[in-house]
Image (tube, rainbow, N blue to C red; front, side, top):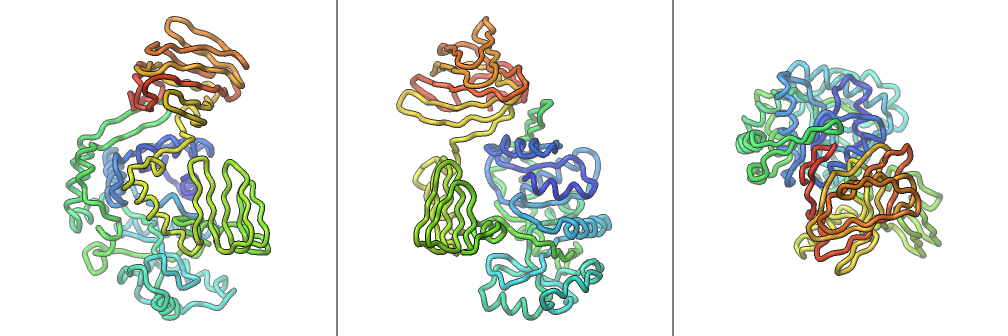
Length: 458
């Protein structure tokens, strides 16, 4: 998220609009806060409906301001190595979109990739160049945009190799530049059910506003009924040959899609055996592995081509060539009624974060960090009491009609049903250990009376 927003900073853009699931809202805002980027609006989808409804929400929000801005639409899970080349291509796309065109950034392919869709352009540009020759044709890459002839599904290896040999084919990165009104008009032309359903959900939206953020929630019932379609399937694939001009700007900027762990391995630095490791990792006689260790030591012995992702929630072990198949595990978790695909030990909030360390039948232990000058809501719980122990920093605690200042190694008890609040009046992060006890310890057992972040009881 933060990298996608930082990449767009080299052109004149308003505060970014993010489209996210409800459960990821504070994580996304925290990532942007870390790089001093202030969002304009956070559009929160109650359920996933793919990218076409998501882009429609953003377009409706932009038009609501009474303007018709050019939208730079980009996924959050991509990297770009050559920022100047990316900026040049994006500026070119913005200029073309200002004329009313739909513009897509097409990635110059460097291998026969079977994991991406392709864009066929006409007229075809030069055939693939030998190594080192691209620097000699920078003028070609900054030439007028190319006309999109058609979109091609993910090919098999033989077909992908044919595309590379023939030339005129680019990877579809899912990055689009177009006016908000153009998107709405094209959607109404090619996918009227999505246009109508998203408008209906937008009309039923609710807004949580505060000095920290602006959360916009479309109507849940209406949004759930929208057909789930991607931007490509709903609109883009229908545009070639229609009244909606669709153009492509070539992008040769060291782009990589991080939608699968194998792609992450591709962009990371590696040792002499092809291993890319993050965190506390030890290996012996292992090659071409990716290990991401978050909370403990991970060791490998005598293995090849593995992905090992260790988090506080779970551990993934997969063949690197099949890393995209992790979706099958997510589907199985859902069908089994398990919560690991949606709930995480460490949860970000606008005031900081908490990490659920341990829990049992009638207790839960959390480590909580509150940012300087931040505070939790004034709240109470119907089913649990809480014990708070200060580890570092200073805590200002409202406990019923009392206000306490506690420092390191001091503690207090919040009885069941008592109104309370935790705040950090200091200049360093406040950390506490919270021990909950009671008959029900779910996160939905909360009644908020006052909140700096406009959350209500969400």
